[in-house]
Structures are given as structure tokens and as C-alpha cells.
Length: 507
Image 1 (tube, rainbow, N blue to C red):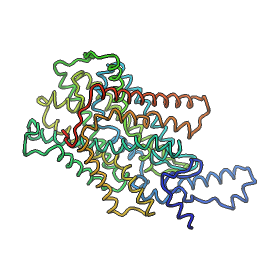
Image 2 (cartoon, one colour; image 1 turned 180 degrees about the vertical axis):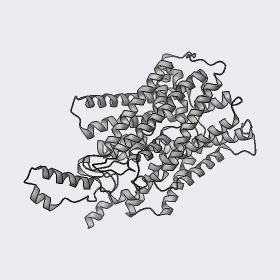
Image 3 (cartoon, one colour; image 1 turned 90 degrees about the vertical axis):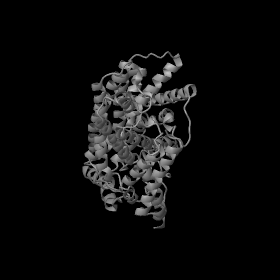
Image 4 (tube, rainbow, N blue to C red; image 1 turned 180 degrees about the horizontal axis):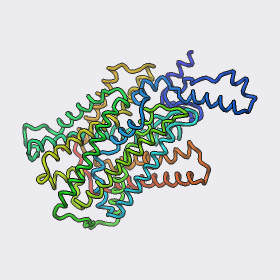
């Protein structure tokens, strides 16, 4: 009994090699369904189909057995998800404000290479999504419901954490910080549209940008009190509808209103060869970052029930397929029509939302502008819930591991207020953080395009020199090379063009 209690307190970081455990959760040493001595005595000498059937049944029981601590954490607390829930979460987290800057990539790539790059990366990331969904469950019965756990099981404890810990933290916490900036700025823009002022900050009755950040953060924290990932499925549905709606409104209005005077789809600025290469690399980074959410796919799949007869990968892949079909129907028209409408006049911050207000703010219906801003705010609030959930899960994991029991409601509520407050502080203290998105995003890019390929090779062990072996090695290496090039391009851009650094002065 003492050994069992000792094993229960084992930390998540102390995960043994994949061959030695059934579940990568912190309670991985809790024994699963024990093997029957009767089966061992009677069936061992007989290499018969009945022995295989009994082993299969025993594996089924082990496969569906959950560790107690999984039932106390917000990601895996509820296992009644389905394909619809997966589609809602994927849509709400997969379309964001980063999609509105896609036309900016076309200004460096042009029509042909822009469309080719967008199509190639779309197919590439769909393939790596499929790999992750297949890797969620292993033949031994393990369910990897967190990206970090799968990485540690694949590459080893130290290397797995080194490769994925910082990128996944950025993709979760960094996205929440960015959403506070976007949501607060859009609230200010909406208020400006309603009162009809040219808001330059001289209005003493208006809230400051910091205060708008605080308003958005308070709303996000209140919404974050929903207990687990499955409980926010309805929130994600609202966010998905909002994201699809504002993307469609923006590109349709941009096409109907026509091109502003002076628009050109040619690269007019004369730059050096190195600067031109860096512009292309940054453009590829914009395209790659438009497809986000790979760090959440295992978490979403972890909310589904699973068995040998009905594995979770089937409804998960179904939900992801339909959601990415809708994402493609939003992103491709957005990129193509945005580049046609605004070309070289595309704003570098805010993308098509800023362009809509800047070039068509006077001619477009005020109701349409207000509706667009409201939809962006709603999507930012709902996306915050999904991207913050791994952070909430990690904080509660520390309590659960130490206390060997579920978090009381006041601990859960307090931890989420703390996360929201910390994200708000960073958004206010480092308002220039989005300027470093290219650099940090380049470091995080392998999470989407490279690591899943290497994970498949290590976990599934395809035959050497087979098609799957070659495909994953090539894509994995290309993903790592692209990451290095994007980091180089981002550093070069920062050094040559600089960034405006100002602390505690969001604008």
C-alpha cells in the first residue's frame, strides 16, 4: 500500500519510457486492470485463437480504464465529447485575427506563389493533424491528452520537454496575451464607431487602452469559470459562428466597396537581395501561422470516450475534416480578395480589419462596422477559453499531484483569475510583444509542421525506406529547415528595420 501511495505522488515530469507505462498521466504508476492468474495458467501453453481473443478482451478493458487523476483535471474531467464538439473547438480556435493579415503575405509572394504557398501549407498541416490524431492512442492503451506528454513519451523526458515546453507555453499563454490586446483594441474601435469620434486619445471621457484591456480580461475571466473543456462546447460554437461571420463580412464588403485609389499588386519597393529573401520568409511565416491549433488537438481529442471498437480518432478526424473545410472556405477568399482589394496598401497591423475601417469606414454602413467589431470581440473571448485551458490544466495538475484529490472550487476559480491577471499584466507591460511574433513563432513552427512527422516515425516505426518513412522524414526535415529560416528572417528584420519598444504604454 505504501508503494502504491508513493507511485500516486509521482510527478508528470518523471515519465518512464513509452514501453513501460499505460498512461502518460502523473498517476501513470497506478495499476490498470490486472491480468488474471487463471488466464496465465490455463491459456499460456495454448497458442490458440481463444488465447488471442482473451488477450484482446483484456486489452480492451485496459484501454478503457482511466487514471483517477485524469478525472480531476479540466481537460480530461469530462469524456463525453463527440465530433460536433471537436468541430466547434477546432473552428473557434483555428480562425483568428492572424488570418486577417494573410493578404500581407501575398504582397511579398505575389499571386502565383501566394496561392501555391497557402495551398501547400494547408495540405501539409492537415497531414500533421491526421498524424497527431492517430498518435493520441497507442496499442498499449495509453492516451496522450497533452502535446507535451506525447513529446516526452516519444523523444524522452528531457529532450521532449526541451523541444516542446517553451513552444507550447507560447502557443497557449502567448495567444491569450495577444487576444487581450486584440479584444481590448477592438472594443476601443467599436466604442469609437458607436460615438462617431476620431479617437486619438484626447477625449477625457473615453477609457484608456489599458482600461479596455482590463474590461476584456474581466469578461474572459468570468467566462473561464466554466469547469472543463467539454463544458465550453457551446461557447466554442458561438465563437465558431462569430469567426466565420466576420471573415465573410470583411472580404465580401472589401470586394463590393472596390479598390482604393493607388492600389497596386506589384512589388514596388526597391530592396536588397537579402531583404527580399527575408520578406519572402516572413510571408511564409504569416501563411504558416494562419493555421493554428495543433497544440490543442490532443487536448480536444482527450475529451472523447474511446475503446478498441470505437476509438476516439474516428469522430475526432471527422470533426477536424469538416471544420477545416470551413476554415479553408474562409481563409482562401480572405487572402485572395484582400490582396486584390488592398494590395500594397494593406496595413501591417490589424490586416483587413484595419483596412476596412481605414479605406471604407466612411462609405460602409455603420451597422456593418459595428457588427464586425462585435464578432471579432466574441471570437477573441471564446478563443481565450480554449487556449487558456492547457494553462488551467497545468496549474491544477500541480495541486492534484500534491494533494492527491480534485481541486476545490475556490482553488480552481482563484487559479483562473490569477492566469487572467498575469496575462493582462504582460499585455500592458509588453505591448510590443506582437512585433516579436515572427521570431517566437518561427521557434514554435515545428509543433505544427515537423514534430508530428518525427513522432510518427518513433512511435509507429514504419518500415525503413517505405513511403511513410520517406514522407515523414522529408516533411519533418523541411519543417525544421523552414523554422530555422523563419527565425533568421525575423532576426534580420528586427536588426535592419528595428521595432518600437515601449513598456506599459499600449497604443
